[in-house]
Image 1: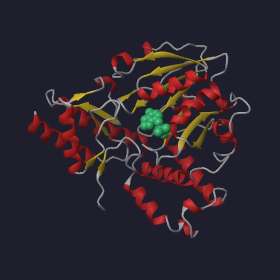
Image 2 (image 1 turned 30 degrees about the vertical axis):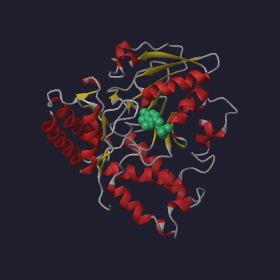
Image 3 (image 1 turned 120 degrees about the horizontal axis):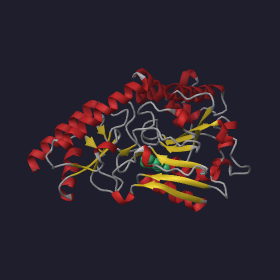
Image 4 (image 1 turned 135 degrees about the horizontal axis):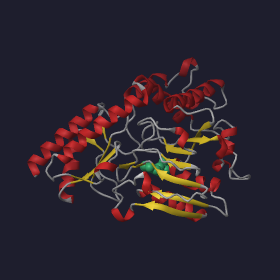
Length: 362
Ligand code: PMP
C-alpha cells in the first residue's frame, strides 16, 4: 500500500505529511552535506544548528522563558518516572502525586520505590473517569514537588487547567497533550513528554526544566539520569537521538505554519467535539469513558454495547482505512487518538462510520 491511511494510534502516532515529505527530500543529502542527518556527527556544527532549531522551535511555540532549559533525553517518558524522584525526592522529603489514570499511577508507584511519595488525590475508585477541580486538591506545602499527568492517554481524561502548586514545584507528564494548546509554562517547575504523540518520533523525551530545579540536583547521579549534566552539555552528554531531534525541528516548523498553538487548540477542540457529538447523539449506542468535563481533546475513549460489537467495529473500520482504534489492552473499548497531525477529514470519516455502524447494529 502506498496510500496514507487515517492513523488513530495513541503513539507512535501520525506525523504531519509535510514533515515526512521534507524528511524524505533531505534524507540522502542534508543541506548539501552528502549525508543524511542520521549520518552526521552529533558534534558537527551543522547538527548543532539542527539541535538549536528544534529547541528554538519548542521555545517559541510554548513561549518558554529564558529561565527554563529545554533538554532532549532518551528512554521515553517511563524513564522520567524514575529520574524525577532520583533528582528531586530528597531522602527526608516527600512528593505528592495526583493520580488520574494509569500513567500517573505508574509514575507514583515508581516514585514510591525511591522514597516517600504520597497520593494527594486519586480518581482510581471512579475508574479514572474524572479530573479534580482545583479547589479539591490539597497539596502538602512541604512536599519536594507535586506530580500530575496533564492528559491520561489510556482513559482519555485531560486537565483543562495548569495546576497551581503554590510554592511547591509542579512536575507534569505532558506526553500526550504537549503542543496541543498554549500552556502557562511559568506555573511549572518541570514538564516532560515522550515525543511520539505530538512532538516527533519515539526515542526522544523532551524535558522543560526551570533553572532553580537544576540547582537542586544532587551530585553523583548516573549520567543518563542527571538533569544538570544534560543542561550543562546542551543535551549531549552522550550521543543523542539525532534523527528524532531533527524531526522535532520539522514538526515545530509545521506547527508554526499552522498558526501555532492557539490555532492548534481551536482545531483540536473542534475535532474532538465532532467525535464526542457522535457519541452523545447515538442514544446510548456509544458510551464515553470520561465524564463530560474531563474529556480529552487528544484521546477519545468509548465503548459499544458489547465487546463483540467492538471487535466488529474495529475490523470494519480498519477495512476502510481507519486504523488504530482499538482501546488500550488494559481498558478495552475504542480509543480514537486525534493528535495535532490528525486531519479533520479523518475525524469526519470516523464520525460517519460511527453513525452508519450504529444504524446497522443498534
Ligand atoms: N506517560 C503518558 C501520559 C503516556 O501516554 C505514555 C505512553 N503512552 C507514557 C507516559 C510512557 O511513555 P514511553 O513509552 O515513552 O515511556
